[in-house]
Length: 226
Ligand code: DX5
Image (cartoon, rainbow, N blue to C red):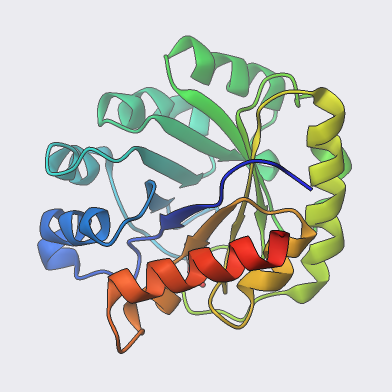
């Protein structure tokens, strides 16, 4: 089991897009560890979201790190724009990269933390030869494109497989999960090996507010790992 601290990385996909700066402030006040921007190009996934300027406009409102989840067909062309916008971590999809090894190395060259995401159908073996290049692996627990989808429990063995791959490297690599994470599902993902939890809908639908939602998910994840 990973000895890494549990981290909460909210997705701002369900946030009020007319007040994103204020929404980032509210998330930071609620105790999140970083903020995830779900960048979608309408081609890799059937939805269109945040350009770099939107993220740049929010950057100075908060101190927490920004991570860009690049659900795009051309991450090589866009990476520098999201680094310039203030994203410290860039997550590319293995499925979108013809030359994944080069793409990850280029992100490191840009001064950001390289990270790779796996769609539900993509085996962990797809990243076996880039584990020396990444600081984070994201195992998708939904098919990307939309928030509010059901958690795919059959991803748990893959989470554990990636956790073992990370352990074998001896490197300090985050294991992140994204999709359908909430009070009813976080324990399974954490017990399987996840230490960074992306949640969107579960945070915003909590009747007791963001701070309660963040602390509840964190507590449930920590309990599942102990
Ligand atoms: C899918 C998105 C969502 C989002 C979180 O492309 O990446 O997984 O971040 O959505 P919820 O937490 O609402 O499932």
